[in-house]
Length: 211
Image 1 (cartoon, one colour):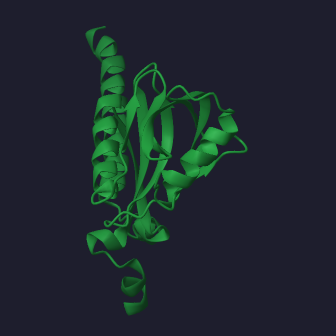
Image 2 (cartoon, helix red, strand yellow):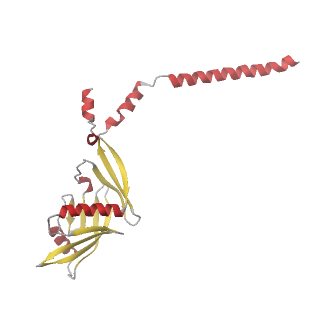
Image 3 (cartoon, helix red, strand yellow):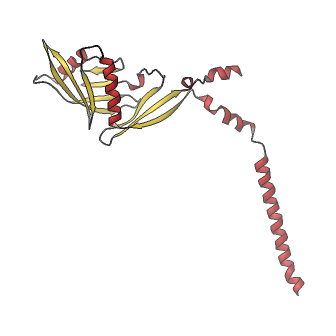
């Protein structure tokens, strides 16, 4: 009777041992089998399908405000022009416009609108030039005529807006910049930075040609 009771346990033990052996064999084959050549090639050449990498950088109104005005100071150095930008709940442009033998203060409130291509349009909300009562489009004409701006900034009096071609900014590092988000009220500003591999000393084309 005791011998008969032990047989089922022996059978179960042998069955469990066989299953464990099969599992260990499959695991060993999986771990030590070579990776297929196609997977190795994909892993090694994935970055070569592109010539750059893209990063999203977030910042604050204060940081961007400091950067923009530092750029303006350099742009206007050695000239008689004075204007600055202040980022608050909207974009505020302060400056001076010549009027006969004097100048008059300028203040424009602009609403930033991000474009699909990463540029930004500054749509005029309100505008004032001292005590002068002039049509907004006429004031924008004066702004376009007398305020120096870089080539990638276009003042459009007819549409009462300033188009900032951020994607065409020339940066010494050859980085490409595009606006991702520009929410001033939420202080949520994000930019896409495209870093060419050549900037890092990586010449993908030459490496491919060498092969």
